[in-house]
Amino acid sequence: MKQHILIADSGSTKTEWDLDGLRIKTQGINPFHQDDDTIRAILCDELLPQLYSHCSVSEFSSLKVSFYGSGVRPELEEKIVRLLSEAFPEAKQIDAHSDLLGAAIALCGHSEGIACILGTGANSCLFDGQRIVKNTPPMGYVLGDEGSGAVLGIRFLNALYKDRLPHTILSDFEAYIGMNLAQVVDRVYRQPLANRWLASLSEFIHAHVDEPLIEALVVENFRDFLRYNVDPYGRRDLPVSALGSIAYYYQSQFLEALKSEGYTVGKILRGPLDGLVRQTV
Image 1 (cartoon, rainbow, N blue to C red):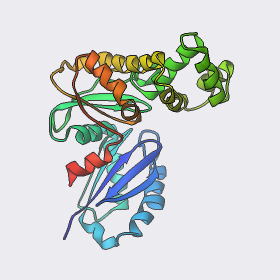
Image 2 (cartoon, rainbow, N blue to C red):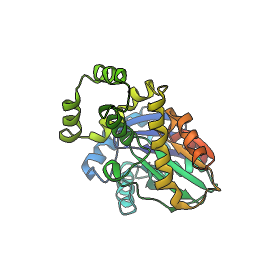
Image 3 (cartoon, rainbow, N blue to C red):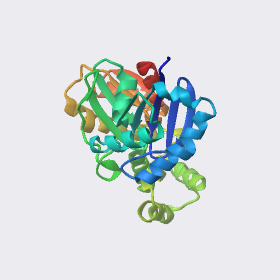
Image 4 (cartoon, helix red, strand yellow):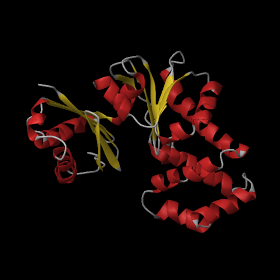
């Protein structure tokens, strides 16, 4: 009997699933933020109905499930495995790992390398081809997260309102966002999910990245990421690969930062799922 492989790439917002080429989306699954009942409901009410519409229940008896997600710390792997086992009681194998390991596998395959996630947040690791051997703690957008979309948003707003960017950019931005300085400060300090809102400013920043001062902000954000997060690995001999929206849409600026800091580039991907499928099949 053919073995079927279900692979998940999960963030806090959405989870993308691949079953032998069939792509399915559900809500995000994060075991750090969600309790058992919430995750169980996503699996039973969203995932399984979509799978059953394409597959028979008997096919799951040869199923292998590999789940890679944010919030899957070592102590929470068992929680995800247990809940997936409830959803797929006949599965032959179920495992759960961090999104960072998923990124490393997708980017590096079975080769040694430095793998990075550059999206709303940022993370990196030194990968030996099988496991993560070193990880600089990113520490979140308040204490760290250099290279991320959230920090890019912070640096852009700082430059914008401290008169380091052209006044035409300021007027265009306030028309785009529908806010003035007081409202921006209120949105960041008083409203929920400030990191996501800050990262969402990347759309405006990217549309104006031809402005030299804005491009310099983007490059410097990446250079700080390399200095503070990648340099500690002490492996300038290895290529640096990255995935995530910030790495993907600012590829030329990321390449410039890599060159300036003495690194070579490996792969740059929008997301990990295609790479995970190639490495797993």
